[in-house]
Length: 509
Image (cartoon, rainbow, N blue to C red; front, side):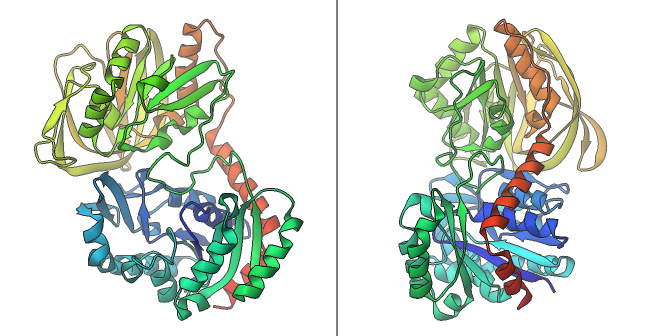
């Protein structure tokens, strides 16, 4: 039976996900067979496992840090907000329907705890240690009775809990004391230590606060973790981009504009592009900050019809048309790909109350939403993609599909430069992706396609040449960079968290 340890927070965005990732990496480095777990996630940035199941991306990063292939048991319940205080409910990787927040929290969530226990049983049988992440705060009294991700999990496993506060926001001491005060006695007993996260400055100046906390709460402060910039690791699965820092590079050669639609999803698709030294990527919310981009990108969407209608009403549709007409290329991914066609149809109201709408009309195709979802990991080859008059080819592009639309094509004007060669581990030869004949518009259903280092650099070099700049050699490996980021995180947390006490707490179970 596996040992367990749980990270809970005084609120959302205190760094639970990152600290779970750090502990997974530290224990993995120490030879422990460790696995991450979060009972319930709310996220629009989801991932598809090798067997075609859907889970939150934070647990994917934690699995990578632990040297593991992501699997849905690490995140058995996923909530994907659809708008209007409702979410699509994904259980053990499969969607089971949409539900209002009121209906979910008034009884349905507790019914899913059986799936949580089944997932935990599998992990307990196969691993030495489970590092568990909570969600939000365990002291939300209005949600307490139907909560399945915080103290219900801790009490079920009798797992020791570390309570985390974000001092960078202010009010960390009060939030720790207040959270403990609002917990029930048996829950408070499970809290074995406090962690102050995201500290800036001289740690010795915090000693009076540490002394106060330990005396006031009777709980040891096990670590003061410094603020870490530019980690390069997927953080908490926020449903928005509010906490995602803009990485504007004033002297960047290339400027990429991503349309930040209200129902944007899987915006991690753009992280690899944003991390390039010659790229400044910004998210566009209105015509005023559209700018003069070298490339426009349309993201995935949890509600493609409503996002298309928003582009229209906001004036951004017209700005996109003007830019493409003036020679700026446009790329759409998943929902953004569907918007590039002539029509979006939703006869079963799969995504919204609308029956559909016209698309941008750049590609000779139409998409109809159906009630089943395609989720699969894929490997693909790109053959002679005409991007602005330059042919780009690449092999072994890895990514995943996750959509509910079926796209049909009219005529033969557009090209299909992508071939899926493997889907869910089975060989195939499926045409994918669509490029307009003039090379100015391209769309694909494959998330993560621009994580491929050579493919991404080839695309960016076409933009460079168009601007009269020399192409750059690809010198990057995103995989290696991510591994270094996990190691850097682990090194920092080792130096600032009492790991001897952590091991003692683990061993005491």
